[in-house]
Image (cartoon, rainbow, N blue to C red; front, side):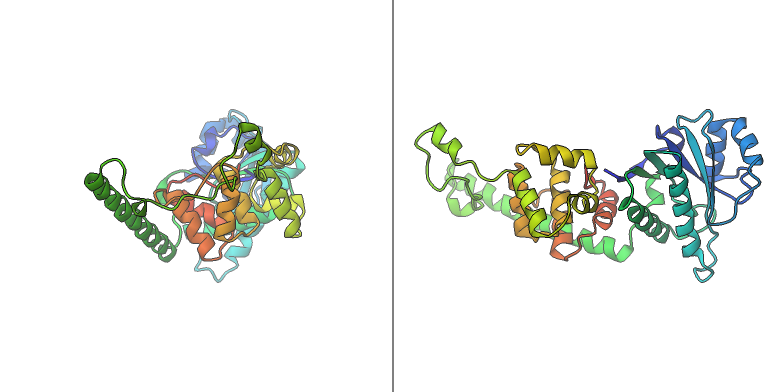
Length: 334
């Protein structure tokens, strides 16, 4: 997955480079900055002293020293002054400068904190939006895995209105599922093990229109595989392979495996990621999932959140992943 949101301690990330939310002096400070300097050891401060500081919106690079990474990229974010003093532009510049340095040094994996969202006071929701949008735009043109490292749950919140809307959507679908299960339980109690079919859900479509006379005949009627359907949909949408796997937040190597093996069985988050990238309506999303052996269910928060975004026509995979992360669900991608 090219962009991942994770909960971790950035000083323990085994990546090519970690990004330090530094101040203009580069002399260390509190929060993430202080933690990185303590973990890296005194040589990091010596290296920073030789850099002569860094302007807001810029970034400079040093070795990682005692850290489990090759480099530390020191990015200087803006202080929040109400939003009308170029804070967003400076924060975007900060991420771009750090990513450019990582690319120049041949880094394949980079970990970022949520820059400026600590003592600099940038609102966390807005800081997250800037981070995700800027990193996502960079990844459209570069092959790199980027981690956005969130230290604790309090450091991460999506908008209260959207959170409430999704939570209500989940509760409504869970309620429907509970009502159905209770009715089925009552029917079983009345009829025994053979409850009437009207209490059951309609069976899904079968790949065979009638019962096969033999196993060989059934195997001759194998339906289109997940890989075959995916490649067909990419062509129908007029997309290139790269446009599709990048929009799906999928690694190029994984996509190559899927393309070369028509019987490849992806994970459920990977299959849904492609459905989102292709902007498939719910019916076609469920069809693509069945090709991989999965289904959407109202007994799963993950599935209900996916259904919510598709039903609302929102196919932004990064926004979907923000919501999944907030509800402690697996993220879309590989």
